[in-house]
Length: 162
Image 1: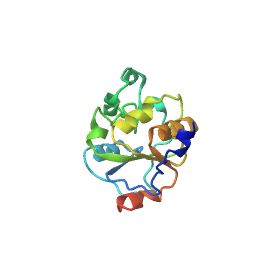
Image 2: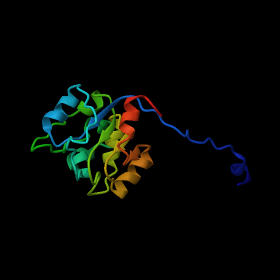
Image 3: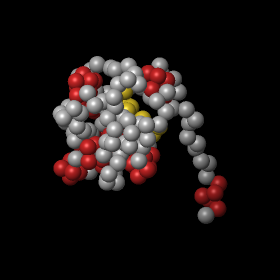
């Protein structure tokens, strides 16, 4: 035990710089589709973000048969926007997104760990929402996905700041 006490502990960096695209999970299927096709949206509080995104929408049950990095092909396949399901297999991963943004109550519902793992495997490193459900937030943090309710970080991420 004394040997363990003498081991140096490397501290985490105090700042993080994310490099990649930001995906806004909007209620408008056309806006969501345009992002998946390569267009970047500027953050505008007037854009209506999806509220009440459940883990079932992030990873529908039929996807949960996968348990490895294959899950990265499937985030948001169950996400409904304007009565449509704009997210298709592989589009989030191929889009180079590192941040996913939504409205209120992100991650509600079941506590399935596949949801943040699918996001992580697709490249998502940070989730921003008005509020984030406790178990989903803990699952994100356990996997190393940053979570925030501060929409001000979006401009800092876009500007390449820490």
